[in-house]
Image (cartoon, rainbow, N blue to C red; front, side, top):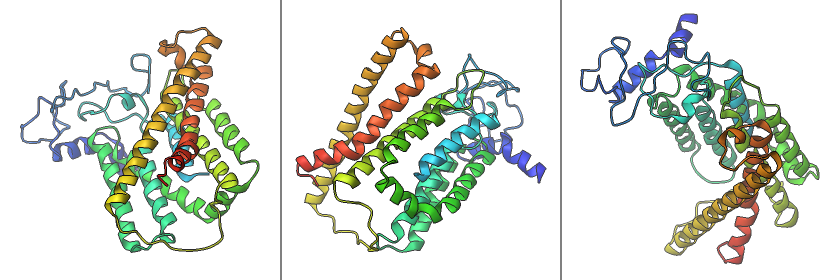
Length: 344
């Protein structure tokens, strides 16, 4: 078993998978797809993408000074924190060809892409089974195919080992099984409890400020704060909608069929989509400017100072306030504007 786990954690299966998909380092392109363990010299990636170099001891120290309830929200926090606790390095390059730059600065285990894909696809399946009329088998296959494709994409880009993606998918599966019996209770509390807005803001903030500390900067804290902030804002928005608009929580069990798509319906759907995107992007732009300006004034740093924006006292409130506003606008302002424009 230990030997199997060691193989799944190594870079060689990832490199072999890339070769099978036609992705070779520039020096090996068209060389017949030999064993990537042999002759893994200093070479770039084909298709115009530069392969990242990493020494044999990669993952043990910073590179250039940097390394980088709602079910999916909980899943992502657990995944991001687990990376900085386990501190497992990503696949070595060479022999693996790296197609991404930013996330290579983070640790690898577990794959949060695999976690999110598994959690979202199967949560969607479970949540819609009793609401819409469609074959359960079709939904199960769709969820499995979607999550599998996302997992394979992380191997293709060279960002995770096989064990990383398997671990991420299994963690999400376990969390889904554990949380599923409490879904209705959690939804009821989030939509009706008077303490929901306060807890939705305070709990994620506490988690973000107490994120595991490293000896060097890691973007995982900022990414985690972004996810929790957006989830907090959306949760507060759903609560407000349930309190002052049509209540979303009912005890009735009903099923909806898929309506026939008409040209008018398509126009309305596209209009709602573009209006929503515009409001979300506008909110993000405005809040980034306002929050960064206030924090810059408070802590005496120019807005363009990236090092200052990585500090705990700046990064957490900046990310959290900005993206909680985005989540709130998506669940409150966008539907309100849809109603004013007659797009409901």
